[in-house]
Image (cartoon, rainbow over all chains, first blue to last red; front, top):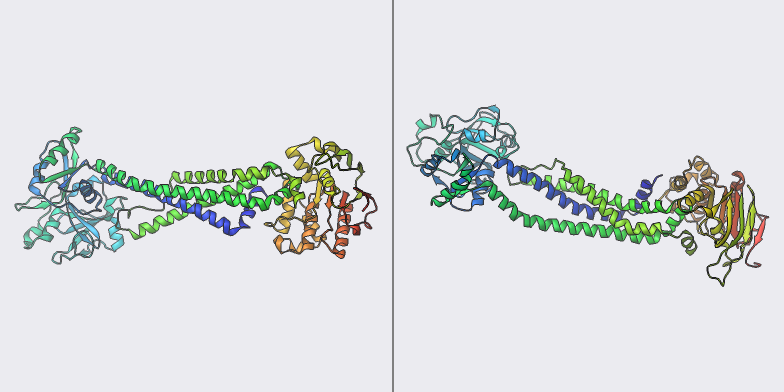
Length: 407
Length: 210
């Protein structure tokens, strides 16, 4: 027998009240856990995906939408821009590198992105098998696309128009898989990459089979004598001056819009922040109520337990031991609440991710433990100490003789 | 072994308790008789180190009980004094054996005779049962076992037979005597129960004739 076991015995002698208190606290802590997990990974993911991209240029519209569609591939594109405009821009001396993107198609919900090999380089993408695209309709799959759809090298598939599934199919030109990427842990895992030419030719009405055999552009813009469009451009600055001049210069040109990823992301977090604060507030209210519940449970049980406490004193327990006895009950309760809460939080997130595989939080994982979660346990224990302090003090002051003669 | 000298105590000055001096050596037994309200329980509390008298001294095994205070007094009590209360109060969340083990834990005793005690008191078969499944007689025996779990030098019993029928009352008193003799402990029983009178010859009466 020891103090810990004694408190534990008293806790499980009231399973309902104990269970309810643990559950209530766990609920509040689970919300906090989910918030911490999402916030940490989401911010990480957001910054990681946007790394190396200084500016995104696309059609006029919402700058946030442009960033979301061109970097994170979660929103709809703002529209297309003339390639002539894009090429003119690429001659600007403030631009070090420019990567064109052609969006608008998907296969089973996974987006097909037309681009050049610079895009692979931007993310340091490595091939698991095969090689990057060389001719029109060659595609490279992100690792998740390959594993989820069960596709392998040399397989053919037909893309559909639109960026979500359930749109009409382009039945003429099957894509051929020439490469599969290693798992990157970023947005590339969920993309189907191909050349800009592939995207153009899929939408063309006429079928000039000669050009289907010609190699595609590996860097810069594809060569063409037709009037073509691209969806957006990812730009790297040559020097810091560009950050000041380039966006203003582009936005003043009527057809194009420039958006800075870092600026738009921080704006997004600001918008989300209100919601996060609200949920956080709710969680804190639940935790406070749980703490109150524990306090009331201990305080009430103390009335019927005064006799037990007096008996313990006659058996040689010191008043300090009684203090610890009650305090331990509160702390064990909240410790268990924290463990259950963290478990529920992880479980909830894994369910959330499972149901949103292709969505914004699809790349998150519930199988990570952050050091903030240790703090959740610490805070929970503090709640336990605070809630049981007054009951423990009452136990400490139990007058044995008075208590024993009263009964 | 146990000595009480010049003890004075009252809750209010009008109602003085008359507490006789006591002197008991190892293995001696004493019955303190008195009607309700005569201060029997108060005497017991004072002897048990639960209630500090206004004046006087209690010595157990050479130690002046009230010269120690706080935690050391609690530990001393746990180790040397076994108390059996009128209402056999056992700790319900614990099993029979755990009730004894808790007494061992608080006083730092090993508790190697716990099982023997339970056997002698006839509740060994129920050692792992929850306390609330016991009958009243079994609960009373458990409270005796618990009081004896640390091999105390002094056993104090407050109306141990009050809620028992004749047969059980006789058994309980017999048990108490046996155990006290076995461990060579001082046994003091305070009661108003006339049935106990025949069992212990060494008697004093307080608060007037019964």
